Image (cartoon, rainbow, N blue to C red; front, side, top):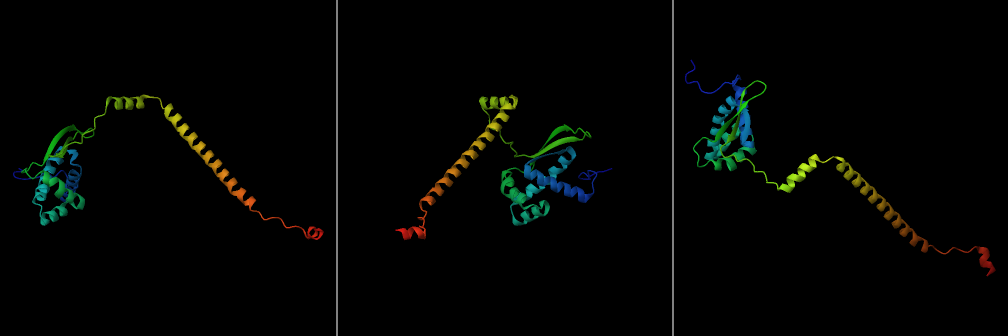
Length: 195
């Protein structure tokens, strides 16, 4: 008989089980919701509730105890600064579990574990025109994309040709002043005598 035996072993050694739940708590606090098996999710509730209750104390000692478990400074800071204040009026029950059905491979029951304050991010509503353009973009033939790419390449080539012509013109302009500045030719000594 297993009377008054708390916790689930989950077919793992003690150290492995503890490390697994530490990682799962970190993931839960980071993403605010995780997908796992039902047995792990139910066991995870106790770990998460314990660490959030610790964070609600807000003391330095509590922060150090949380870091000893979580081993991630960023998550500890988030836990004490963002997550714990949301639960200040709640006396436990910081997580909720949704059943998601069964896993395809082994038939294990799956669950979604999330913090009770989790609010899914709202997607911005798109206008009917934007939706229509997206659908047309997906349905329209891809020839337009090829044509647009060709046009871009042609524009780049034209720009290169124009830049080359500009450089040639600049070179010609630089050379012409040099010709004007040329010194007069010296006369031959025979010509000087004739004068």
